[in-house]
Length: 151
Image (cartoon, rainbow, N blue to C red; front, side, top):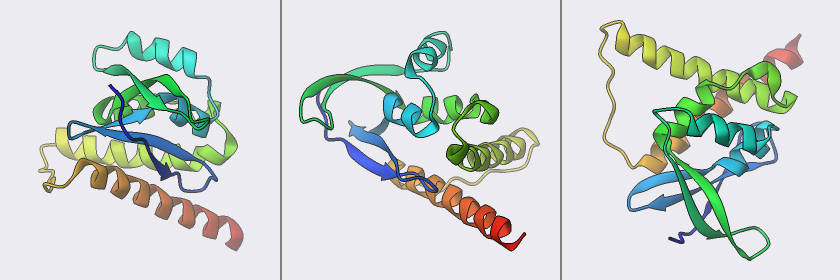
């Protein structure tokens, strides 16, 4: 399979993750996500292959150099779960606020769900969901930067 890749800017960095839409489901490039976090892809790929909840799909896509390459892609569910497993103390300094903001948001949603509170999830396009998550992370990054500048 070969699909068009889309770059999604990562707040607080000059990098982006790469995603595609495969039959209505977003897939995220694991290599690009690892690059943004400053971690090696091979250990992360091996970790995902050991997880029962992980779905990793190999697909051919046009890389930055214009050549067709095999890429490890993960679905949205796997991407979210995988990000929750990242140790913020072991990633690049510029990615720490991003991962911490994401993990705090994910923890709040899980707490609401398992705490017998209702979680309202509006019906939206899955790319819109990813964009909204990135917008929330970007807002947290801005708040952290403003707090740091004010100190």
